[in-house]
Amino acid sequence: MRVLVINDKRVSKLNLAEAAWLAAAIDADGWIYANTTVEIGKRWPVLNVAVCNTNRQFVDWAAKLMMGYVAITRKDKGHLGWKTLYRAEIKGHTHVLNILKQIEPYLIIKKENANKIVTFIEGRAWGRRSPESCQRISRIVRDSWQNPEIRRRRMEGIHRWRKPHGPCKKCGRTNGAFDTRTLCHNCYRKLRRARRSAS
Ligand SMILES: [Zn+2]
Image (cartoon, rainbow, N blue to C red):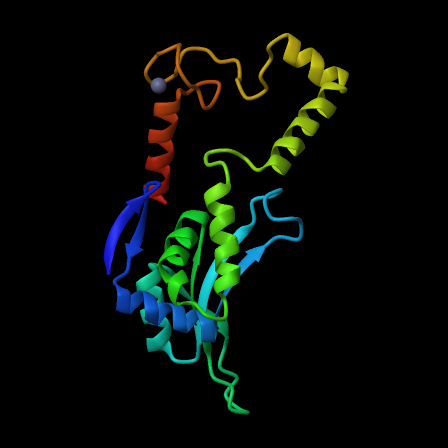
């Protein structure tokens, strides 16, 4: 297994044996999951690939190959033969696409599902919000424009978050970012850090 960087994210490049092992583990004891109630493509779904088992070593190995993390699905109840159930998991379209493309040839049960997700991720527009969230934002902007107070403030260029301020009490600067009425961003940060280390 090697580490590659795709979209500024560290992902794994598997050799043939590793890809085949991971495919079998996911086919038998895992899932390829798209969390969306609406049609795929309309909303960017949360995608998730996981391997689940009561054997920690098995799950650790899957996590290492996927460069994912291990979480506990079910805690040991101490009776009735229940064991702690671990899962190795990855989320995020870059990570999911990278793994699915490598294991797809070796999948049997979940091959079709994997193909569907690969096609979707490769076809989506990167660096853009989903069509649904674009619509939601434009609706919020349009509705807020109906509010006369918000409209007036926006027309006059008033920004609530820009507080009126005099020169900085510590360094005397008048321009740049101010966090309070009397302190610039840098001086306020220093003060906060000093307070935090004192306590
Ligand atoms: Zn200052």
